[in-house]
Image (tube, rainbow, N blue to C red; front, side, top):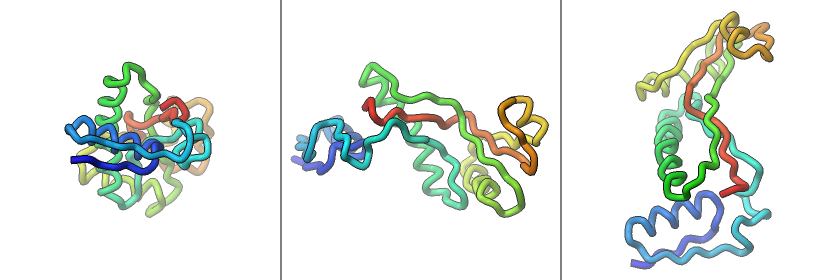
Length: 148
């Protein structure tokens, strides 16, 4: 079977790569150079995280993406990702960070709830005034999109 993928940004390249690995014949169409500085995927970096409030599907997709990116780096022989962890700060019950807990719990993901004192110890640049806690995951970081 032959597949046509329109757009050679991060998503298009990933789709074409997976189709080719599955034995498909792939034609990749891009209106400009690859990488294309006028494309939606172009930028210096993207933040990759599994912290999505009340969104278990999106959280699962992000968690699965970590393993997929590792496959890409192994095939490319170079890693364009810096894992530094992810953190969300809660200031009150029911806020954005609070909403991130349920999807992580449902998926059995590891995370830490760090009280303000621990936040200040681990991240000395942070002034945790008004922060109830920080939700920290060891996975998450920066994807250097302009290098792919």
